[in-house]
Image (tube, rainbow, N blue to C red; front, side):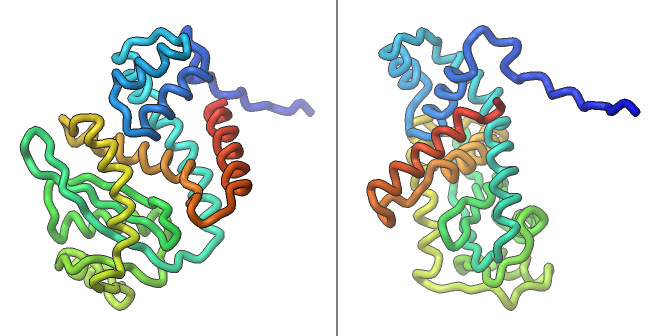
Length: 240
């Protein structure tokens, strides 16, 4: 009896002359560090890699979501085996062409960015959509920490988990501090032009930040170096 073998999916790099290693390096530099497109171009030129800044833009748009999706899939599968103790939810203002938009972000009790969600409003409907998206992917936590925005309470009351909501003056520092890496990158990019770009970049940035965030202030130097080397090795194998 003959066995049928499933063909391997085609490589996403097959139509590009540049090596996958260079593409991964470009995407990592632009998303991980607060660099502009031209900053990445100049740094690569010092390494002998001649690229236009528009190539950097094209590559992160093309490959960034692919890399982030693979990283997120592996991390979500692993995190489902553990209990979600506490989520921290917060929203930040982001201006797009002079108009105020909102980026909703959620992190867990260890600072892992769970979700980033861009909306034009900051009302109950937006909070409800954000919470449903979170719970569909990550399940239900034992506690949800928010600020005193009424939209959270109204949305949780409709879902039926208002009893797990916690609010307090200092309780949500975990979520507020997690905005800082994204804010630094936003300044380097000179803000966003479309909400679609904001949603795409925030999702990619969250996955890459989670992958390389090892809380170096809490571990020894040797342990941090080992974790950093492992993360770089895993990154170099993404979409391999």
